[in-house]
Amino acid sequence: MKQTLRELAEKLGCHLLGDSSIAVTNVSSPQSATSDSLVFVEDTSHLDGALGSPAAALIVGDFAAKNFAAAASKPFLISPHPRLTFARAAKLLRDRDRNRAIHPSAVVSASAKLGKNVAIGPRAILGEKVTVDDETTIGPGAVIEDNAVIGNHLPHRRQRHHLRRHNHRKPRGRASGRGAGERRLRLRARCANRALRAIPQIGRLIIEDDVEIGANSTVDRGALDETRIRRGAKIDNLVHIGHNCQIGENVIIAAQTGLSGSVTIEDDVIMGGQVGIGDHARVEAGAMIGGQGGILPKKILRGKGVVFWGTPARPVREYLRELAFLARSARKGS
Image (cartoon, rainbow, N blue to C red; front, side, top):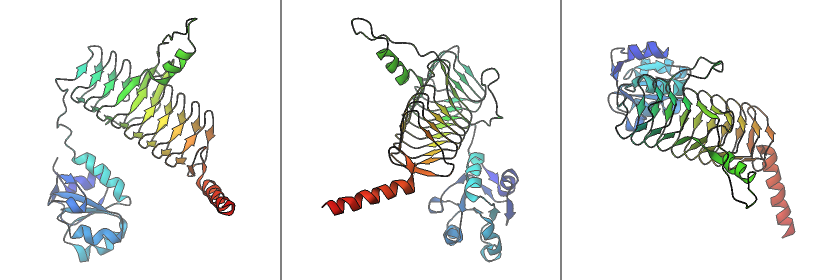
């Protein structure tokens, strides 16, 4: 979607230096930029490289304003947060009308409720009474099972936030599966002959706006109540989220992480790859868990801005001291 720098500056709240009539159509890195690309620079060390690229204009920090006179070959969009502004520009330049359709091979239940401008990819499946909000993208092969809600049409009085739009599900994810809760309950429902009997999971899955769920990830519906992923959460590929989990706003979960049932992840938590969390555990707001960190069942991890590592997870400095102690002990023993 072509836009002039004047239009972008107004929408992004940037101070524009240079020719406002220049039009751009895409965002890119300096290395792959073309004559109609917009790139961003966060510090002075990368400014010369961006200026030497074919890009039409640069999103730069406040530091670059004083350099404009000497570098007037390209317009500057001045922002205190260039990376964030660049991400917003990418959304503005994306053509919303492109491929906004339901693919003929998608299977959509007649009882599903779809909002405006919803895109559903090839071979995606939407079950009974699924609700999908406006501007949502469901990728190829995604499975959305019965009664799942994606977007801000939340049930009854539970909608507590003013939610932005633009939900996304990437290819081949699965939402609202029956999950480990059913398998665990089967063990408790053995008959006299030790046969297993499935206990249905009858809860719901709620996915709020601006959530992204990567390829081959799975999210289980609630056992009796609901599993909820709140606004702005970003979930990588190959992630499993068990039944009744509560994922807070703006949470980041990296690949191959697994959450057992009834786990609570509060707002702004960051989780590295291959993190494992036991059932009924809680991670309080703002904590950061390093790759392969482990949290035992029913434990509470608290510490805004604190990096945790290891299994069981503890503050990284404590973990590194323990490793150093073990290394010294091993050397003495040998």
